[in-house]
Image 1 (cartoon, protein in one colour):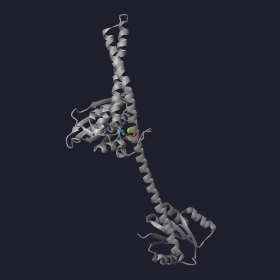
Image 2 (cartoon, protein in one colour):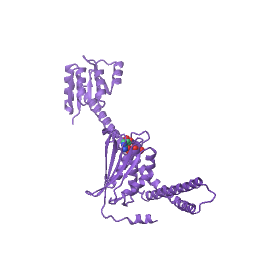
Image 3 (cartoon, helix red, strand yellow):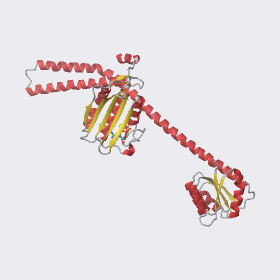
Image 4 (cartoon, helix red, strand yellow):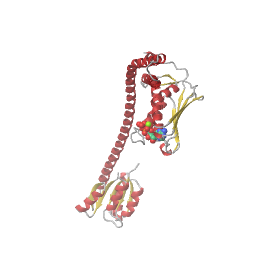
Length: 399
Ligand SMILES: Nc1ncnc2c1ncn2[C@@H]1O[C@H](COP(=O)(O)OP(=O)(O)OP(=O)(O)O)[C@@H](O)[C@H]1O
Ligand SMILES: [Mg+2]
């Protein structure tokens, strides 16, 4: 496309001379007879180069230069003036993008062709540079997001490895604690020490009961950690029971909800088809949704987790509902973007990673929300027919 050049001079003869001189160079030439007309044109057209006189009736050259700086920051300006003083020149250079400052009358009018061509070259180069810079910035931003997600993934598998080690180490002593606590409890029931008062006996019996329960809970957490660790490699997949994965997520989140005075209601359908998936990564999805729900819900609220079987297409719906503050409609699209957060301490990665994991499983994630009433996140995961279980996975599980 031809570049637009604006010629501004209050002398009609000069406008004619300049126009005739540049006519053959393939520009779209436009003229203005004073500053005001020039500014009006600058507002409405994309000029690449502006040739302007300085002294003109109604607005002068400085006003034209200032308008160009405001509306066409890329445009190059060539000043052609009969009043060349150092002061005038300085003023012009301060006001905007001056490419050249020429004194009238020009000794050789052909100089115009060269100056305009060179100005255009500089302008295009600058424009190109800016575009490259923007491209670079976009690429950088993309890279930053990808590496952030990768770090997050690495962290998860590091946590998995750590969890496996800890869980393994804890298993033996825990088995001993559970066993001995049970033994003491039974012994105490059958041989009550003769010199203990009723209250003393009750107190000790209750303490041992708490010990047994605590040890059982610790054992549940350990086996949950082991299940998590076993599948923390992103590519480790097997046929998984979504309800079991949710129960594992509850092990980590239920106390958090209780501590904030939130009731957790579980409605897990008994007839879910198995899903071919990565248990640790799916657990990560539900844990994130539950933590978000907790953070949005005030004391006294409710978080409800519901699963249901879907027939067409065959799969599982998992809904996580809260009675929290909700999400304004204009934010609904943004919440799945990486780094979008409204929390002082948030990374804004929770939902973007959740979405990524759900999509890796061929599923989808949806959100419904009413400000002041609550939010529901719904995850669909397709059931895969008759998958053969990866033998390496089975071996690892046996180990
Ligand atoms: N259940 C919810 N109720 C209300 N707003 C929510 C809910 N879940 C998510 N949001 C909104 O979506 C934003 C993005 O959530 P996301 O989990 O991606 O990041 P985050 O929770 O802010 O940070 P992080 O997960 O690192 O703690 C949140 O900051 C919050 O504004
Ligand atoms: Mg979050």
